[in-house]
Length: 551
Image 1: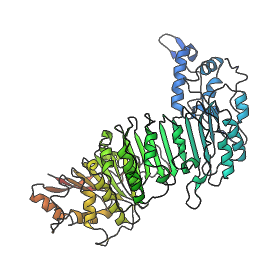
Image 2: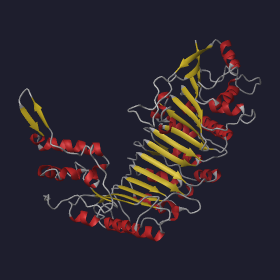
Image 3: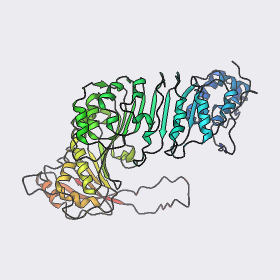
Image 4: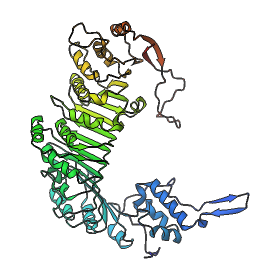
């Protein structure tokens, strides 16, 4: 079908919303020409054939995601450039991934009346401000075209009345034959007013082509055993955030559903409330042992009980796992033998550098990356991270030690370790943190060659663990960290004589350690242009790290 240029127009926006300026936008289409002085020919873009133009348009689509389908910011500019471009673009809706974007800025009725029958992207609401009454009406109107909806993003605020949410979700009772992505978000979890008590999707909701399911505090998460998972197969992304507790999603129910998702690439499970460990272990003890292989699973995010993760990793395998980030609730015991085997089977997670961080947000974490350069700039984005909650700094050392002991096989190949903290009131009393806690933390790093202390607060505590043990109950300075060759400290701290006994014990066995000073430039923000907010002194002194290096 040919759509006349006079009848097809970009959707009109609702006043008083203002449009952003795109003066440097790649969509600022011009008719450039190149003058070749050698031939005297002038080549214009009009001389390109349709296939070449289509390739160029496809490149623009890839370059401009996700703005490609947002009214006048995307492919609308191309179809209003000239008659030929309009014909090429509208004739290739699949190749160019053409959609109609439905949100609060668009007059939905006018857009649908004056646009080709392209698939719809329905996006309404904000998790903090929710939807206006007009947004709710427009969302319902868009959902009535269920045979054209490909993506749905609906966000409700915590204060949104349940009846309003139920009215909108009731509009999803019909089948959605081409729906590929569904995101439902209901406010922010609050124990005083649990948002997961909100209405859920109607039982008649069907989406046979659904590939991405993301629920945050949605009402479906509060239904025991999540019936919605029983009606979706072939998912690529599964994100369930705000599940009240693990009782609502038992492992023996989740694993058979995962077996129906062989293409699953991303798995995120986030529980709101802690469940007593004995309850979780009792649930797993009586659960059938169904084992599932997920060959495409590359990312796992998890917040909840360690026992639940242990039960899950006992029943699944992910040989190509490349990112693993979990947070465990604070628990008196931590035993993860199966999780350690699960991670060791993922070859992409056999990395060489690690950071143990004690944070003032009551968490201790261990992050692992391919090398030490990947740890310092953005430790929060490392491919491997395990956190455990603890309220006191000595408790954090204990928790970090539990993690390291539980993941000993994974940490045995680490060659570079960084210890860091942002806790200001780190305890200085000798009995607050015992030597045994540090030995448990550092003991699994049997191949550690380089130890970097990023915070001077940790030097005194660590020095006590490195000193030889006069009793027969613990390892001596020679047995502890046998492969260690380098220790680095920040320029603002000093080792003093606290490491002398450790160095002497190593020297007695032939592992001589010499002191030397190593200078490193102080890290600076990239300097692109001078700004009053960015001070840059090219003559600034260099900071230094002291390094103990074996000869």
